[in-house]
Image (cartoon, rainbow, N blue to C red; front, side, top):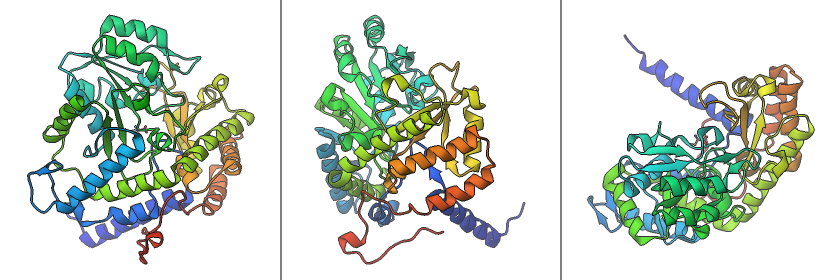
Length: 431
Ligand code: DSN
């Protein structure tokens, strides 16, 4: 096989240009697990730390040349401690999944039972037997789920915890409309000698902005997260706890257990994002939750089956639709993508399984909120979705209008720019 490097180069540039234009300025992105960094965070993301090693823990490294990486990791750690009211923070995990795995590795033995919400109710793959817990040979059982409440069934869960005596009970997940019952389960978990872990990946930015309760304040022993969903930093993972003993075990699981390089170039961007959340996080988080509610109400008014109507639809960045009557989640998501509206299909708790035909669409408004959208724009988005999915309009026609609409919202809010800190230089994305 031969390959022409020049045409491959041309192709690489063209793919990146097309992607950037499509996802940055022409599509309405409603993937609930994504976001955009501020211009300053994006600017700082490219730095020399990208190619360096600093194996070990802060103050005890195996490499020379790390004095500035050490200082930066220290600053980032302090910012995260302050923002999330946590005594101990490990910012080294490179993803939320690695953060979860480090906690399991630190707190369990093979064969131990752990509990997490059912996959169809939105638990993350790293909470399930097919993911990290399975690799560590943990026995994963479902927390009982109440469809009416769209939440964990507290009484049935307390009963199960007393029976099973799990080592870890995991709350939080990828579908997350209402705060899970941390306070209500913490005592039962502790009674049987277990730990309560809250995976805050989806809601970290809302916690930072005080629009969602901080699980550590409510009795969670450990909180894990990624750093790039509602918390709009670069991709990465983080672990929080107030328990010094647990933290020692967790740190060892992170290194030498599960990582040897921490991708330090992301630290500056994560730190800037934390600073931005201190400065603008409350306004951002409030607007995100307001927008999610507005989008749910508009969709409902247009005839969509919006999940959890009896509970007011949502208290997070997410909105869930049951589109089983509109061809199912996969078909609806594909049709919307044709119209440049990017969403993910999802299982709903009443679906039989996760991998089969699923009934739901999961929408997240955090990224569009950062681009300055408010209630009026949520109405416009709901109307675009109505035209594609209910009225069955030509997707190419809707797409042209989506592009025109989206191009008005290309400046990231709630963040800093290089100019704000006296840097008269901008790196522009290839478009
Ligand atoms: N699976 C991702 C999500 O979309 O929620 C998180 O890793």
